[in-house]
Amino acid sequence: MRKLKSKDKKRKKSKRPVNREYTIVSYFFVLIFLSLAGYMVYFNAVEREDVISSPYNTRQNQFQERILRGSILSSDGQVLARTDTDGEGNETRVYPFANMYAHVVGYDTKGKSGMESLANFSLMTSHNDYIDQVKNEIMEYKNPGDNVVLTLNHTLQQVAYNALGSYQGAVVVLNPKTGAVLASVSKPDFNPNTVDSDWDILVSDSANSSLLNRATQGAYPPGSIFKVVDALAYLREHGTIDGFQYTCNGKITVDGHTIPCFGGEVHGTEDFTTAFAESCNTAFTQMGLDLGKDALTSAAESLLFNSKLPIALDYNKSKFDLGENPGRPLLMQTSIGQGNTLVSPMHMALITSAVANNGKLMEPYYIDHVETVSGKTVETTKPKVYKELMTESEAQVLKNLMAEVVSRGTGTQLSGETYSAAGKTGSAEYYGSDGSIKTHSWFIGFSNIENPDLAVAVIAEGAGTGSRVAVPVAHEIFNAYYYGGM
Image 1 (cartoon, rainbow, N blue to C red):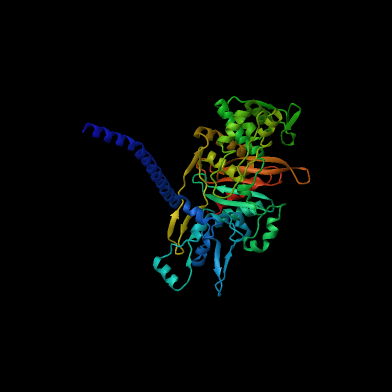
Image 2: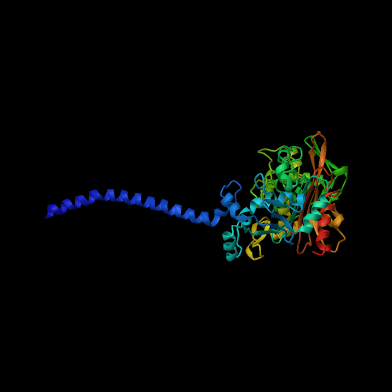
């Protein structure tokens, strides 16, 4: 009996390693199964609509066979895109305002762009009354797709579009408290009604790049609007702007590199607020030299330079690059928004919004809600904080500085209204195609300082100083909002 027990024990011992291997393999396959199941849940909950709504997804052809593409509307009820059907059942996508919304609403031929792409799934999905859907299926009629209502305000879009006039450039208007995009203009533009016939011309138009959405994809030297970044860097380095003093002689020369104030103006002895309000290049050049690479880079990157941006449409990341060991001339140029720094109008509108909103950047969004053809709400976008770009006290200092630009600096055209305004002008130099030095006209700002309503970024390419063109554009937008019955 003892011998038998001993043999049984040996058998059990010899089986244990084999059983352990089976157990490991079993757990492995269970883990794979659970991972696949988890991904399927994640895909259906998170990625499904993005994949289906992709313009490269051939499954959309099935939607087109049974759904009539929904309309796109402005926040105040204007139809920006609709689908017309003739007596023979031929469908035509129509854009009633043609070029005015070209980049932001986009087009639905030769691929998709703008809201036509972003909201594709909603436009090709019908939440119409179930009984009506069944009737349409039986009668072999298409069901109407849902309508997408944007945050864009038609009055502000029209004013911004007209105010920019014949200049190439862009205008972005945001609600800083919610992140809603109220207007988005890019020029030169195109007619989305004729994209199909104009396609070859549009894609070969390298001189104007009319298909480029300059509001989000434009990459421009910021010029003096970058002084907002300088001011934040200085504030973080010193804890206050009090005690700053600089004597401007009209120009500054370091290592053989000279930077003048605009027009050679001599500002004399200035405190920080005066230097900011008058956009004194020499004061901020010296400030940049004193701050150095690390402080400037830290401030810029905290404001999302060199980072992804929370923008739903295609965009270009803004660039801030001083290299490993920047010489003092590069530091000087960078401090006044030249050098290697590039930024989009939308990015500057986001920074301006964060300043206006006490340091908190709200995530920008274009779609207010989706509704059925009968007006029943399907889903609504809820505003949410994206990130705190600066503390409330830092934002307050920048607010005060930008308010002084309007009250006694380069933005005084905005003063004297029933509403208050704050901002910063910019004049960014660049080389034109003929080799001559030209100047972009910039303005960033916000209205109703204590309880901000609008945040604006304007750039007019090659238009001269910020106060010459960009400020008047912003002025028209603010006036339309406060005096236009909105």
